[in-house]
Length: 86
Image 1: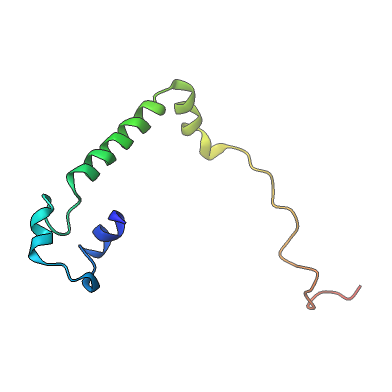
Image 2: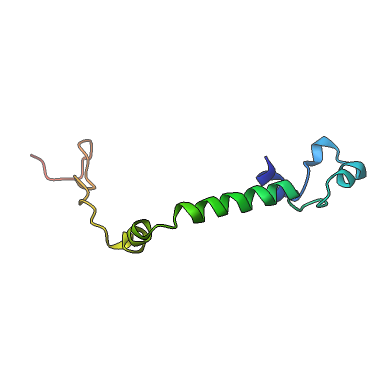
């Protein structure tokens, strides 16, 4: 919900936000609350600690060159009528 509030620029208009609502939010309208900022920081910190491993860093560095099997089949399907009659 907080993402939608930030994305849409504050409280929804149908709820009838008043000046009192803006006064209770320490960050003000349209800005993320302090607890959300702290939560985002904690998530980023946890990601950094989780990815702080030499093996994981190497896997991430070379991931774009990893081999993937070729796609099976083709663009033509069994119901298509624009092919050679067999």
